Amino acid sequence: MTRFWVCIAGAGFFLALLVLHSRFCASRLPPHLHFAFKISWRAEEILYRLDVDWPKYSEYFTGATFCVAVDSLNGLVYVGQRGDNIPKVLVFTEDGYFLRSWNYTVDTPHGIFAASTPQEKSVWITDVGSGFYGHTIKKYNSFGDLVQVLGTPGKKGTGLNPLQFDNPAELHVDDTGDIYIVDGDGGLNNRLIKLSQDFMILWLRGENGTGPAKFNIPHSVTVDSTGRVWVADRGNKRLQVFDKDTGDWLGEWKNCFSEEGPSAVSWHMAELPDLLDFYHFASGNDCTALLIGLTRFEHHTFHQQQIITDVFYATQ
Image (cartoon, rainbow, N blue to C red; front, side, top):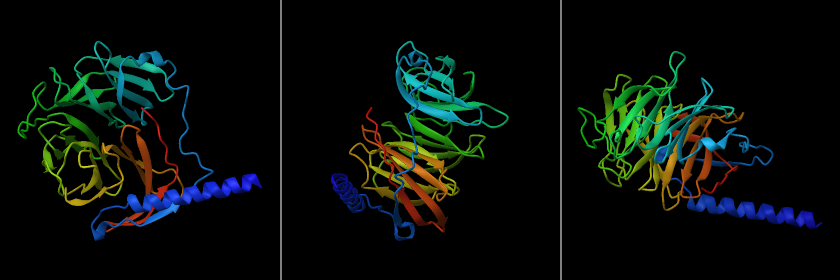
């Protein structure tokens, strides 16, 4: 009997949380981008489990771990860390075995993105350092050989020809090789740039501000399977969404983040049978992560959006 009432109390508490969530975490999108929320309870499913044996030898982490990227095509994991006289990039297998590291041509890594193809193993790194290698975005092969540099090493700026950066936060490379860059982690620029695979500017959005397509510390970027570019607009405490091809502003989502705003946004193809894909947003010092799935998208209208209730928290 006691267990019965405990279960009833727990269910009541959960329902109360859902009511509070719907009240305070509603989306703020134009009518043509309205979200329809449907709650899905997955009490029996475990989406993530901590692997206490990864990596095999933790002593390789000698600095402040700042960013990570997984090259699932080649089974590699890249880790960027900060500190003096330490390797800035570590490379592991997906099983956690250390392969190699490098420190040259990297000052202060901020974002990292694995962009390998069947013909090439590569990783991109955004460098926000103030030293000789800073204010750049660099492409390396899996052994740390420098392949490409975007920006002027060691010199911040706002220029477009040649292209200059000031604290470029993150980038995303899509399947066609086009590059999406958020430039302005507290620097001169507050902009989203799309480059072609031969590094020509296709479109640019943004300036400092709070309105549509304006930014205050654009901190993270991702592209989903339906051609939408998501930007974590950290200082404005919101996510902004753009059309991948045209750069047109599609909408924003806010009122669901901590005082520090969203620090990261990423998209993943769902492995759950009733979802097409899901998004991961991180916000605040507690790194709160919220998974959201979308099962259908037509004419810039969201349908059947589901909030997965397996929300998890990890303290830094």
